[in-house]
Length: 639
Figure 1 (cartoon, rainbow, N blue to C red):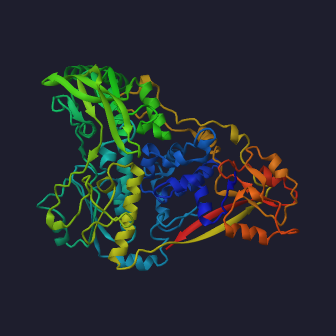
Figure 2 (cartoon, rainbow, N blue to C red):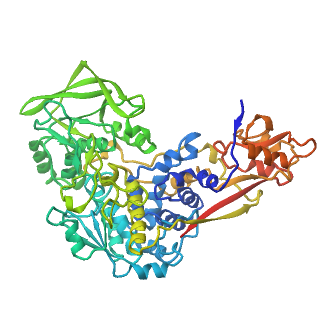
Figure 3 (tube, rainbow, N blue to C red):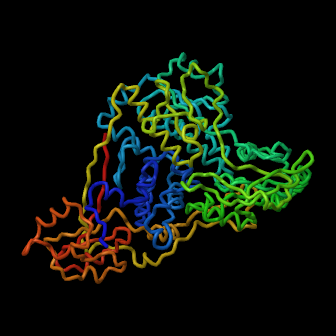
């Protein structure tokens, strides 16, 4: 058996910073975590904010694909990247006492970490002034004030365009505002972050939905040169089973929209939520706080009028649902929420709050007289087919019944595109989303772009932000009549003296600690559950970062093959391996042979497993000839 190897190149060094590679907007999460560990919180904030106009919101509710990719996660537990972002945004973000800190990014490119072209739209264009001048007086319409639309508006405004956002609702934010419960995301924070975007000169028109009589043709007639559609997915999907039309069976998106608009729904005391994703968990945890009958709600309100604020909140909990059960087709290993680091923590919080779970069951029928009373659940024999596609199979002979006063369906969402007409020339996919070019996000209609959920189906917040930013670049290329520019890359390499390079003592033994939360007994109404790290906790959690920007570099010209680096490595990631045990292509083998001495065949080659390396630096310290060095790689993209 041979060992597969590769020779490192630019793509290899980029891929080593796994958190950044996994982030849809290329946030250099590792670098801002390292800066927090060093006590440089303002610099950390600028790194976190540069690519992401919703950094503060993401600090609360991002799905954090960076954590799922984190190298530390393969050892013990991923670095708590999202919660550390919250730590610095609370100091310097839109919600802080220093909200203008981010304004520096309009004029100064960030000085830390890997810098990609989507981070500061003006400064990373070589001809920024010319780009801005071209953009001036060109009108762009954004349809939908959700994260995709507002992210596009942010970058287009920075590029000099006259941007107007049309929003159907009475407030901006889309599903961030109307889909995410307030106990996870304070409304004041949403408003503060959006106000920073509007402060760039973006015009916002609320209560202005697109319709068949006020649609794309009317926007073009008003002089808009390009249009971005980011209307999201505001309609829930139905189950095709008997009884779904009964009162008490509601869609999760409708339930969350009503709750987040301040309306109370009569759900009764026994609530079943069908689904296994984040929306299902949001609905279940909200139901624990908001459930109960109308009479019970009135009694709680009456009690609240004669008590202090804390007693009032506790009264709301007493009026809440006492029995909430999540029913999912998947078992715990397959459940969408439990496929992510953040999802595991969400699951644990739901269990603490009393949410129950029934897995590997699907609704067969809803039973009741006018209103649902019982749900028959059939056993699921398979969720996916042999190709991994979602294709549930059931055993209809294996049924159990569960009592329910209401049922919330969290089984997916779809867009409302009733405003489109055949004359618009917009092609849809079989799934009912808008068909787009995956690279440019252009639709089949010239000058019309789309992104976020309306183009890709339900996705997470940070993917919507990335879509908006990509669309902004594509719209700029379209309006300036230029080819969509591909970035060039430069790499700066900083040699770190081995005697000066140090990881924080004991970093390898530090455990991941989730951000602190309120005690279950204090989780009342809209009280925010997660409280965030204090300074000591943040420094300690940031110190767990393995500093993947730093690489161990081996110089065979200096090596005396003493094997000390191999002996000292605590993770056994270095080895001298006979060349005949390496899986080499012809070119690589020829390259090694060309460097050989003596009989023309090297006896061995140094190999390293980058997946296991913890960047401790012991190999460089131990090496007597400086053949092993620690070097920081910084990549900069420019258009």
